[in-house]
Length: 419
Image 1 (cartoon, rainbow, N blue to C red):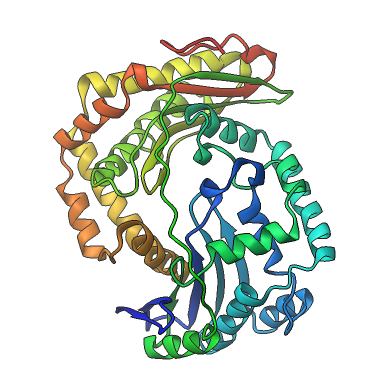
Image 2 (image 1 turned 120 degrees about the vertical axis):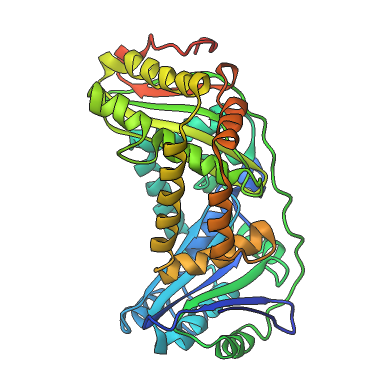
């Protein structure tokens, strides 16, 4: 049910038909994110994302909002380290309207100086909001500490001083230099006909041109370190980091199984040891930050500041036990089934299917069938998980970021440098 076409100007259109739903999600993806921004313009991709909603010669900002609200649709966008996406979720018969609005915004946004002054202030308020959120602050410091000096380590939203310096000419040049048929493509999923989507896209993007080279993915170096931030919070926020895998690494299936065993749910080792047995934390989980050619792996916990060292030690002990004793076949089997079940549930969403089309296109250059993913999970065995754990989770490859009141100042990570 997945089909791919290329328009005369080189723009790719990828669709997946889901006949059992009455809606569709369409996304216009741009192969550009904060990782390719010059440091002095950090946040320009995110600011441009905001500005494309602020009006075109055909529609004011209010009319852009009203036209989608009037049909019960959702219009939104997202910028991350490697991509930007503008998308709309609508009932199936409104797909022509969604494509028209997205194409109008992307190609014809006015980027009016007055609108820019106001929207820049909105983004500055957004930065303040993140700065007031301990979880956001420690996550930001996590990437910047373990990928020290890398573009991928900096926040996508930028910094106040860089956002304040971005001009209208900067935004126009960024759109001209980064948005072209070579770096932009369309994905859509839902109750749709591929040929209809191609026809609509061909009309809406008939004059879309230009030339832009796809960005070169960054490969940052992992820096094991200890970073402690003192803040007046009720909880201590703990992030333990280790090397992860790139999205293109074929061992990603084994890492997902390992991740599920260690911290991927209520039955995971960390949840049971940290929360259920010792009541050290309410929230304890693991996560993967994966990009095309780089990845981080982390453990996240929130605990009483006076027990932060105990929490860190229990997490480290659990990881060391996994390295020493390995995983059990029953755990691997349960994790494989968990992951396949999650995949099936996720694919009931038109948004998830639309995003999956884009991820496969950008990262792998091909569409990976669900059956292939399930077969790759089934092929993961105890040996693959144990081998990967020893490669990524060794004592010399661990970094720690903690945020909390003065009680966390003395926290230490075995083998880490002083903060």
